[in-house]
Image 1 (cartoon, rainbow, N blue to C red):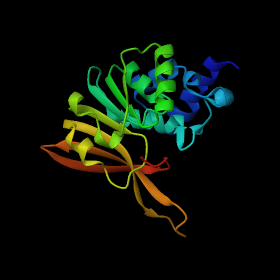
Image 2: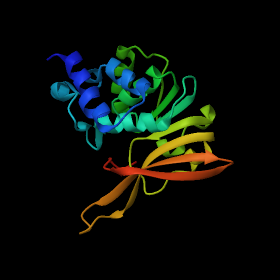
Image 3: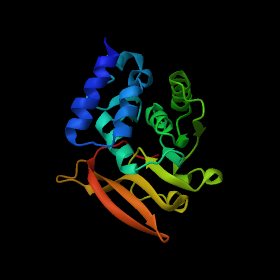
Amino acid sequence: MDFERARRRMVDEQLAARGLRDPRVLAAMAELPRHLFVPPDWREQAYADTPLPLGPEATISQPYIVGLMLEKAELVAGERALEIGTGSGYQAALLAELGAETYSIELDARLAAQAARAVLAAGYPEVQLRVGDGRLGWPEAAPFAVILVTAAAAVTPPALIEQLAEGGRLLIPVDTGPMAGGIENHQNLLRLRKRAGRLETERLLAVRFVPLR
């Protein structure tokens, strides 16, 4: 498979065509080999317009959602960023590619080990990875200009709000209750911005993420 061509198509057809405009985000996603972060059985689908499984209760998010979260984070090179839910390591590597001082937490030790290998193979040894409960954040490295949460929560964990810097942006999918018929919960991706110690909340779009554990 021609991964480079597939990556260019991903950026053109899934990201730019849907309105993503940040040239740094588009360039980072055109540069980083996403297939390095996908399990071998799914590698030929690495640039498809869909999330892909990493194992029980874990996925690598759809490329558009990854790009949207990065664009809405408004990251400036040199800022400190925290990711909750390392998963494959793909988004952590993108944060590093964008120039962030990157920290990432994963609850599943097996996934964390796989992600560490992928991040190193992609050329980002500076990314700091930890196994632990992401709801507690990374207090000794706080404050963070950007916090990205890649699993859905009922509420935003208080520790993450506390660790968000003044002017910082926190993106998180939040459950808003059952959909019609009560089969599954509806989720909205929110952007929280801290100003003068208070949070401004913006709803971005409906999403579907695995639960924050």
